[in-house]
Length: 413
Length: 89
Image (cartoon, rainbow over all chains, first blue to last red; front, side):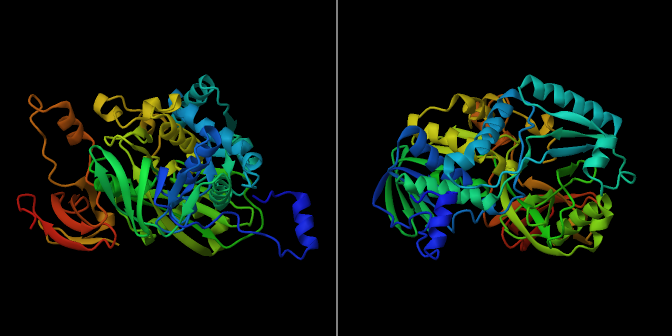
């Protein structure tokens, strides 16, 4: 693998930048692998990377139906944070954030992490009390966060209209931030590929060849591949593959949209979320305003936006930042997210003996990529759930021990 | 935009005026006889197809009735709209 550094930039520049090689290989699918990972998004590629790095397992293929990072990894709002209330969720999401904090060095790839602070506005006395409760709860989990005053909010976000939706203050996690989402995908792909993992794109899973209660081989659009164990990280399409494998999931797939404006000068330094309007917004390094809001509440596999949601989002943004009204919308997109009744992920074993799953992140998968990869890699390598994943098994629905972050963290969906 | 004609009040409703109610025809097993697996399946497991889906909607801003719909989850094409007592074809 070519190492990226200031010196390598200089060296290549002196040679006219003709010596750069592709960051990852484009291999043919081999007839068999020890581990086959379905889904070449952030979670699948991180799983492959940590399988190689943490467990030394490198006879691995990642199968991707389209192109890597073309699903939800390329369709989110790039926000990372770890303000989850239950200790088991906090441990997992904070592991993800800590791994992200070290990822640029670990992967030798600049993921452009910008920890500019994640702010949730407080609009009422009741929300203020809930936020204080949350800050205390997070402190017990070892995650620092704070409540800032109305005046601080006004200083940090001077363009925010604080009168129409009254703002009493805000909840702030300073370590929250944004990342260049494609860089996460490319960084993990490059790291995994360099360690021997085959990343096979345009390779759709068509069916499973079962032997007893195991998956012996996978039929794909690029041929048959035999496998030792199988990991699945396909987010919104989890039910489709589970159906092929012969079991059911407590997952419903929904369309989640986001959009960006044309680039403008830097005017918004932090990520701002308003539970009052249901909108979150931040400005990219390039200057675009990234905006998102609610899920489309019906089942959908349509990876496209709907005008109703665009209108709702934009009107809310303009309500919060009247000055943005003249900014033009440049792009909008949608990803298919896997929503679970308790808004917590599903990690670990499935009813099929050699199939392990990573799904159910719903609207929050991007921020969890390094943790999802670490935990699925652990299951694939050892056959047992990682200690941090123990509460997140598919069996929790049978034992009725849900981890209801939907209620605890006040996630709207 | 999903637009459905309510089979009760016969008005054309947009998705803004409707409430989605998830999968249709989920039968509650008798609690005393159902195994834990059956009960888990009833409570949590859902068919979540990429393609035709049988679901229920409520004419929330209109007559308030729940009804059944067959809809494609990629194209959103509605192929059947039924009263609750009518069977899917």
